[in-house]
Image 1 (tube, rainbow, N blue to C red):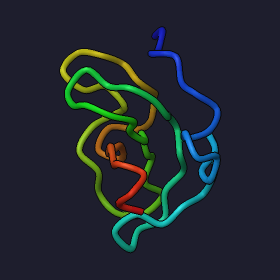
Image 2 (image 1 turned 60 degrees about the vertical axis):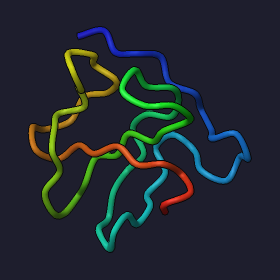
Image 3 (image 1 turned 120 degrees about the horizontal axis):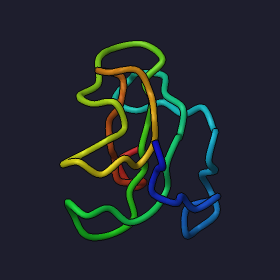
Length: 80
């Protein structure tokens, strides 16, 4: 599956593609950085390493990244 192109870092450079982060108390890896079709602004596609997400990296038919079903979420960088 061809995925949407990702940036390597967020605009301020503080978060990178592939980085392990904590989101809502859950460990996750950054799998996508960039614009999305479902909202304005820069977003992070996260693959949760523990806990439940809501998708497999695709939202509304657009494949932003790939991960196991139910492990993907999107978050705004300011919410980390």
